[in-house]
Length: 37
Image 1 (cartoon, one colour):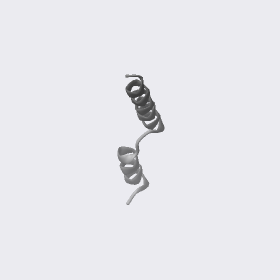
Image 2: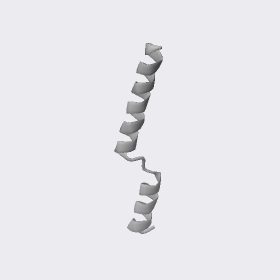
Image 3: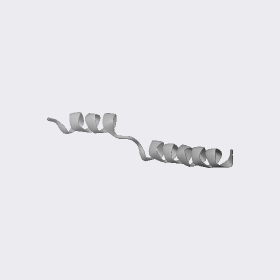
Image 4: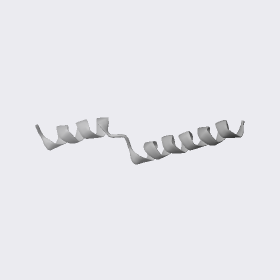
């Protein structure tokens, strides 16, 4: 109900952009690695 509880829920469920970028970079690296084998 309160803004703070909403914010806590949001932060608990929110995946930071940095984490998403890191995962994307990992996926790209894996694709390159697999293609080079």
